[in-house]
Each structure stands twice: as C-alpha cells, then as structure tokens.
Image 1 (cartoon, rainbow, N blue to C red):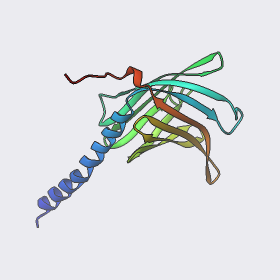
Image 2 (image 1 turned 180 degrees about the horizontal axis):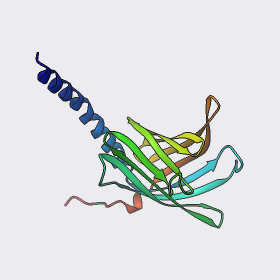
Image 3 (image 1 turned 90 degrees about the vertical axis):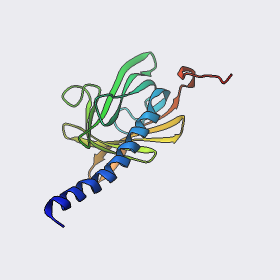
Length: 175
C-alpha cells in the first residue's frame, strides 16, 4: 500500500471514530438544553454549608462542533448572583468559561469530554485547578459537582441537583 493510501486510510479511520463521538457530544448538550432549577450547597471551604437555589437556561451554541450556553442566576436568601457558562467544542477540544473566565471573576474551561450521560470539564483559575462533572440522572434531573485539586486528591466543593422545568417546554397534541 502506497503512502497516499495509508494516509487516506488513517484519515478515514479517524473520521469513523470522530463522527460517532461528535454525535454523542451533540446529543448530550441537546439533552441539557432547556430551563433547569434546583438547590445546591457549598460543601467545603470558607462558605461551607451555604445553601442556594439556581435557575438556569441552556441553549446549544451554534458556532461550535458541540456545546451549550447556560445563563441565569443563583440565589442565597435575598441575594441573587448572575450565573453564566459557555462550553464549546472547537477543533476536537473543549474550551469555555464560567462567568467572565479566569481573567475576571470566573473560571476557564480548558479541556473536557462527554462520556454517555455525563460530561467532565477541566476548570482553572490562577493556581486553582479542578473539574466540573454534570451527570444526567434521568431525562429531567441533572447533578452537577465542582471539585478542586488539593494535593493528590479532588475535593468536592459545590453540589447541585437541577430539575428540568417542564412548564417551559412546548407541548403538542395529536388530533
């Protein structure tokens, strides 16, 4: 087999694996689209024990291979904080940000992957490194955990359980 044929075979082989992976990524983020509400808690650190409630709306991103933009707010008592995240897969790699990214008050997403019913994203801010895991428990329930790297361990610091707000979904009828 000539060099051109080997290169073509390698590219076709890689494309055969990439297409199903990209379809799985798109399917996951499509499933996450919609309005989500639910409680969360800071489970470690300075604000350990702080409980909050969030309302977030997810929409697919159009300028990427896969991804989602989440916007909304989280409330602690009478105080409300705007929340946003953008996760995008570009050229096979994940990137994005929480809030305004690590250059501002938020976090950068530096890598990630979709694995069936869950997504794992690497997050960074200055010397802080960690991970965000979002897992679909069923079609209408999602758990989100944010953990940080402490020594050789990943320590969970934030946990949330979000429920899909079905009142905002379009419903049709059969005549």
